Amino acid sequence: MTVTPKSALFLGASCVAAIAAVGSVFELSSGKPELGSLITGIILAMALPLGAFFFYAAVKDAQANQ
Image 1 (cartoon, rainbow, N blue to C red):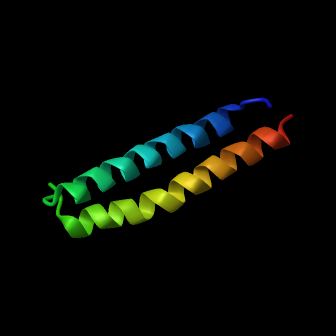
Image 2: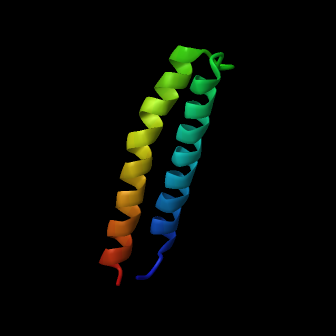
Protein backbone atom coordinates (compact mmCIF):
# COMPACT_ATOMS: atom_id res chain seq x y z
CA MET A 1 0.00 0.00 0.00
CA THR A 2 1.40 3.38 -1.01
CA VAL A 3 0.87 6.37 1.24
CA THR A 4 0.28 9.51 -0.80
CA PRO A 5 0.29 13.04 0.60
CA LYS A 6 -3.50 13.05 0.32
CA SER A 7 -3.90 9.82 2.30
CA ALA A 8 -1.37 11.08 4.86
CA LEU A 9 -3.47 14.22 5.30
CA PHE A 10 -6.57 12.08 5.77
CA LEU A 11 -4.77 9.93 8.36
CA GLY A 12 -3.62 13.03 10.21
CA ALA A 13 -7.15 14.41 10.28
CA SER A 14 -8.39 11.05 11.51
CA CYS A 15 -5.86 11.12 14.37
CA VAL A 16 -6.87 14.65 15.37
CA ALA A 17 -10.54 13.65 15.37
CA ALA A 18 -9.79 10.56 17.47
CA ILE A 19 -7.85 12.64 19.99
CA ALA A 20 -10.73 15.12 20.19
CA ALA A 21 -13.20 12.27 20.75
CA VAL A 22 -11.13 10.68 23.52
CA GLY A 23 -10.59 14.05 25.17
CA SER A 24 -14.30 14.77 25.03
CA VAL A 25 -15.11 11.44 26.67
CA PHE A 26 -12.69 12.18 29.49
CA GLU A 27 -14.08 15.70 29.92
CA LEU A 28 -17.66 14.44 30.03
CA SER A 29 -16.80 11.66 32.47
CA SER A 30 -15.12 14.13 34.82
CA GLY A 31 -18.51 15.61 35.62
CA LYS A 32 -17.57 19.22 34.95
CA PRO A 33 -16.30 19.81 31.40
CA GLU A 34 -14.38 23.05 30.89
CA LEU A 35 -16.35 23.99 27.77
CA GLY A 36 -19.67 22.80 29.18
CA SER A 37 -21.54 19.61 28.53
CA LEU A 38 -23.31 20.82 25.41
CA ILE A 39 -20.24 22.00 23.51
CA THR A 40 -18.18 18.98 24.60
CA GLY A 41 -21.00 16.68 23.50
CA ILE A 42 -21.15 18.42 20.12
CA ILE A 43 -17.39 17.99 19.70
CA LEU A 44 -17.73 14.30 20.54
CA ALA A 45 -20.69 13.84 18.19
CA MET A 46 -18.75 15.46 15.33
CA ALA A 47 -15.38 13.84 16.02
CA LEU A 48 -16.56 10.22 15.92
CA PRO A 49 -18.03 10.17 12.40
CA LEU A 50 -15.35 12.52 11.05
CA GLY A 51 -12.58 10.29 12.37
CA ALA A 52 -14.16 7.22 10.81
CA PHE A 53 -14.73 9.04 7.51
CA PHE A 54 -11.16 10.35 7.29
CA PHE A 55 -9.73 6.92 8.09
CA TYR A 56 -11.92 5.30 5.44
CA ALA A 57 -10.93 7.97 2.91
CA ALA A 58 -7.23 7.42 3.67
CA VAL A 59 -7.52 3.67 3.16
CA LYS A 60 -9.48 4.07 -0.08
CA ASP A 61 -6.98 6.61 -1.42
CA ALA A 62 -4.04 4.39 -0.58
CA GLN A 63 -5.70 1.39 -2.22
CA ALA A 64 -6.43 3.41 -5.35
CA ASN A 65 -2.75 4.35 -5.66
CA GLN A 66 -1.26 0.87 -5.35
